[in-house]
Amino acid sequence: MISRLLDFLSDYLAHRKGLLPIIGMVLIVVNLIIQFVFPLSPLAFSNIFLHVGLLISIFGLMLAWAL
Image (tube, rainbow, N blue to C red):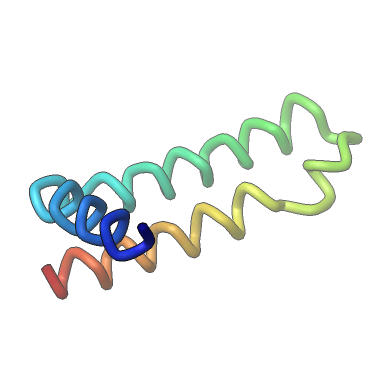
């Protein structure tokens, strides 16, 4: 089951090489918006969208280079 999922994801992302970096950049922008709109929110203090967006962007760039 996991093998089929990885095959599907590999085939899907091979044709959409920029999808993961764009999703990562969107998450980084969401973090920026949260910082200004909800400055006292727990999400603003944790910067979780910033960190996840950065990891997804880097992983997407490495994956696009490999595919």
